[in-house]
Length: 258
Length: 380
Ligand code: SF4
Image (cartoon, rainbow over all chains, first blue to last red):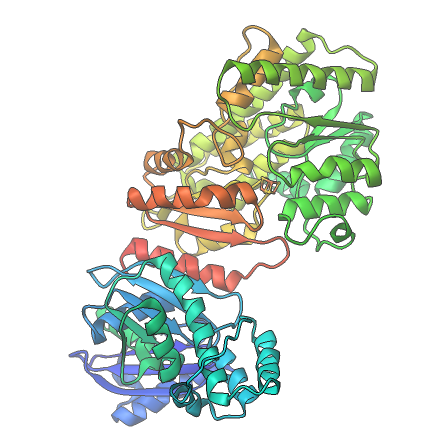
């Protein structure tokens, strides 16, 4: 059986998707990348094979993507996460023209043409502001579980402004907002909005074209997704599992190469 | 050919040592010219050694006491080198202060902290609106010549000037030949080698460089190379007064692209077009500066759009994309870039912008951008 595997090795998580010959998703896996990307990639591949009840010999092609794409030692090829996100997004939502992807340590906005190919893109790869790592630090500062942060946004009735983009400065700003007596929910709403403001700038550079999908781990934070949608004035499409969009795209390209 | 390339690689690995040694060997004074496009034929005609100032490779230290961290790499690196005494072999310095705001800072810093025996500030026009600017430029160059005569105590005759112009023109035509061969067989040289070839011309004596080029060209003409048809041809474009990190050029090639030509100052722009030898030499030097050096964000004419020139270069070379290389904190380039980008969009050109910094080079991030660019062009 010609099965295709896409492995997206991100700075925080490694995601793997396995497709059968008819391009149906047989299984997927999400795990922490840790400090040993090579090991994480191979472990994630083993995980999907196990879930799908397949063996290594069944694999037709493995494609690596993501920040650690070079670390997938069993890969037959590698393609950037930009291209893979575009392919994965159009598979999930065929009418999509803009991808907003916010991962563990970077964010990107990708423009897609009618042929599912990338037309242009911008990446914020210089600092972790507005990324998953930023949210983790903010959750710690708010003393809430990262999973609760999104819901907290909707409990806010008076969003406060968090003006710092820098993760370290934003953390001290949050602490001083607490000291001024602001409510947790209002600060959480401010944090979500600060990410949204940053994304608006990137969307402006690429040019907003609907439909818009949001992918990456941060898409699971309903508060941030809502704030971005409001700021850019468009409804955001979010997959059931937004973290595997890149790996799905990689698996699709892998299947074309078998 | 390999011998010449090795020599050039050695020279460019340590321009400080090379120029200091040259000064000793030739027993001549060295005049540093801050880029771009100072007509240094006049310095050569004064029997001095002209060198184009370069960006060093070290982190900026004391220099930050004199220039802010948001100045471009060559500005900070040059000031740092100068105040730390690394440029002690330079007897004089020339600055063309109309080029950009940062170049305007140098004369004060050098006058106060470095005190070269000779310093000249030139006001070469950034725009060429006609004869009035030609007259102005000739007057500037006359003043430049007089100041050098006063410095050396020797007159510079028209004959001296014409001889120097001839040597420089020869260097231009030899470099043009290197580029011509590279256009025919782009695989023949690595992009970093091409940049080193042009860069070495900027601080070697042109007579010496001409000899090297003549030998190199012989080797290039004789060498056959296997064309790599699957490589994607791209043109790097930029308003850089400085060498870009060679790692970026290597990366472009490692990702399956090939560079048949460029639109860079330490590249095709340095040697483009000869100085006309009919009539007055200073008039001819003014003409080359004003109308015969290719446009870029620091100088040009309204009628010519830099983007059109870059697109023409791309099409002439059957290239499939343009890689804009921008130096962080270069105001002229940053101001021009939106216009350039719109032109690329209007014309449907595959183009990407890469930003380089003096100290930090996020090669992994640049790799992802460039690889995505190749994937876009290649239709992945
Ligand atoms: S790189 Fe730009 S800012 Fe720096 S000296 Fe050159 S023109 Fe001026």
